[in-house]
Amino acid sequence: MEQELRSGRVKRRFSAGDRVRIAVDFFWARGAIGTVSAPPDAVTTISGPWNEGLTRSEVSALGTNTVYWVWFDEPQHDADGDGPYRGGQIWESALTLLSAKPN
Image 1 (cartoon, one colour):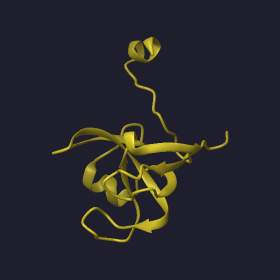
Image 2 (cartoon, rainbow, N blue to C red; image 1 turned 90 degrees about the vertical axis):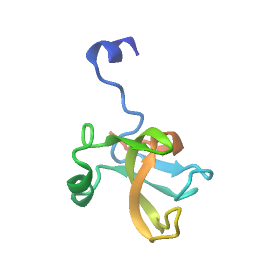
Image 3 (cartoon, one colour; image 1 turned 180 degrees about the horizontal axis):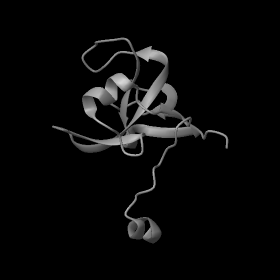
């Protein structure tokens, strides 16, 4: 951690290709399984670039959260029932690593 602070960079918790499960108590895509990925161009065109192409800080009424883009194994509906969506940005705190991408 000390080295991370000295370098000014914070270590990412997940990497592209990691398989993850979304928490069952998250507000959408509850319990879904998917793969961490760089977001599609259509997303970054609207949101701007992501940190190292993989994360960004999302500021909302729910606070500030680090998010990752996850492609879902099965399309998911959002909290309003819209969708289904093949992928979406998911809070880091709602993700559990199932298996890391092999080196």
